[in-house]
Length: 394
Ligand code: LMR
Image 1 (cartoon, rainbow, N blue to C red):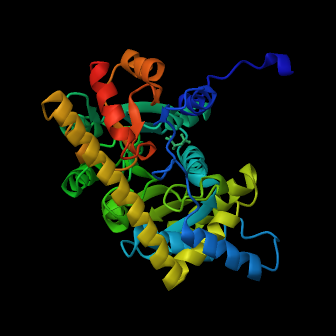
Image 2 (image 1 turned 135 degrees about the horizontal axis):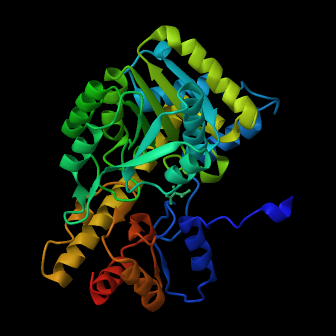
Image 3 (image 1 turned 90 degrees about the vertical axis):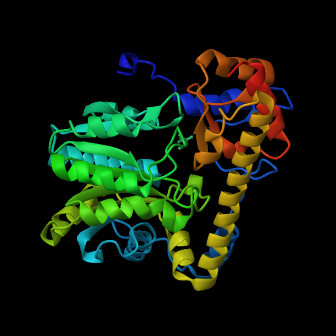
């Protein structure tokens, strides 16, 4: 049996983690995988998480199973964090999942159960795991234009033109904020135009939000998504707590399905629970419980959002420093997009050869499509990166 197995292609992002680890150079710079790092290069456990963990250790009396779709309190807390009051609670079905990837996977399986012939439309480019999972599930997939390589902003005209061609019942995968891998995002006015096109065509939005709070703020980053959820008849949302709570390895995410037709909510909820049961029975609870404790406690929540804001502003300052440094070295504004992008990533627009030269000659690691993780920088490494960018001729 096992001899029938073929080698699987390595995940490009995770492969980079290993290459970086194996590089003996002490001055190497890791701008690869999307993990937040502070100025010391450490991915810290957030203060509120530590406090909640201590409290949980003292008070938790059982490790027995939770609900199949996770704890209702976690669902409520996350629905409120992501959707606020944009939709009525009774219009949302939700299930806790192992991380944001788990939510993406469960969403796709739900779509497959409900509408096996639907095509999933992904942005060009998108997070590589999107097409990988869609392909693995044997679902149909197509791309819509998203990134303009010249301006390094959103090719909004191209995007709208492509969205307008999507047939009713197909699914459009959008990034809620902090687009991965480009860093180029829709404005609220553009979200409104996207909604108008989707309403016109009858395509169904599926929003992946993995970086809420990393862009313009917790509320601002969810504004477009909330507009979609309140105005479209059906919306799927995959949310991750990995980044904004810094609990990557706890695998904490949630799939939310919003329907304006409340009579469809119960059957959807039942199917989400069924899917969890088929795939892993009960979702992981530790991270979800910590998130619930933080969101439901005034003091913990205040401390968490203050720390998240420090993280966000730190990344923004690095963006501005890098853009300034490059303006000085290049003598032009052609890197100004770095300060306009939001979130952890920016796509630099370098060729694969230039990315390879950065790695080989400068020990600077970024994903092959020239996505760099801003959080991998600090004040001292920004000038080093800027000089290397100019040196390799980007
Ligand atoms: C990334 O894009 O680097 C992160 O989302 C981590 C991952 O799993 O790929």
